Image 1 (tube, rainbow, N blue to C red):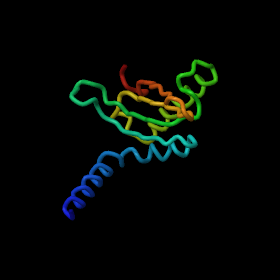
Image 2 (cartoon, rainbow, N blue to C red):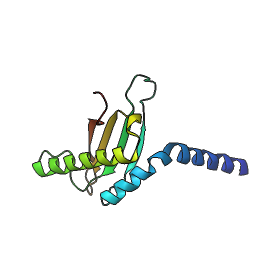
Image 3 (cartoon, rainbow, N blue to C red):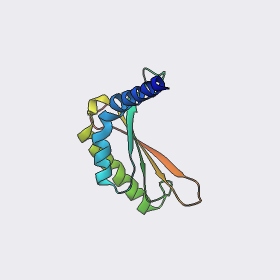
Length: 127
């Protein structure tokens, strides 16, 4: 039982330090920029696809419906996408990633989760 605890703790430490720590400055900046957004940031290529572009994924909660086609929602989406891209350029080495994927989701009481993904090429990378 003691050995299992040590192995589990070591695995968590490995995952946290090697996988999540490079993205913590960006996550902290997103928390400061957008209230109650609960961001999660990770990056890399799709498994098994060596020629796939390196993707920086940002997942965050929004207070509006990201699937809405109303102009006000579209403006908020564009604002978040632009601001997230600027923060990513500031806190992540831009040359490491080719594509920014922004996953927005909205939770409404007793309703289905509403989510939508937006993709953008990083500035300075070839399309």
